[in-house]
Length: 167
View 1 (cartoon, helix red, strand yellow):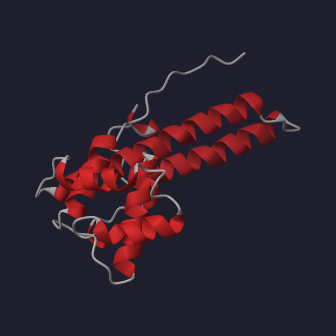
View 2: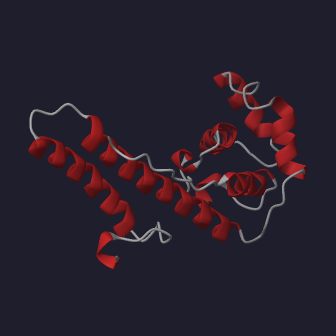
């Protein structure tokens, strides 16, 4: 029997809404942030960011949030994220900052941390549960997963986690 680990995933919701607030208030553009939709943990935030990227790519304007509405309606996700009220809340109800680059970097780091933690979890699950013919095959599969984690940690973008060589 394998011991269960209790891991607290980094929660980036505050940073996610702050970035979106900066977008809809015209402080920065989606393409300026170097963030991808995969960096967002929260469904609503990820959906709005994806709509902002699409709106910008089509030459539209995300300032005020109104330009996002056609994209969100077309995808059928406007009601799922809380409707126009949620988009409006981002313009007036969320603190935004001129230091959006630091906010974007913090969001990216939390995303990398989640990615590394998920890699560790998958490796542990492989070792405990995967039906391989030999122990060697199980170890190889776990090592493959750990090499993905190593790439994340070596990139320096998950500075809160330690690499095995630092332990």
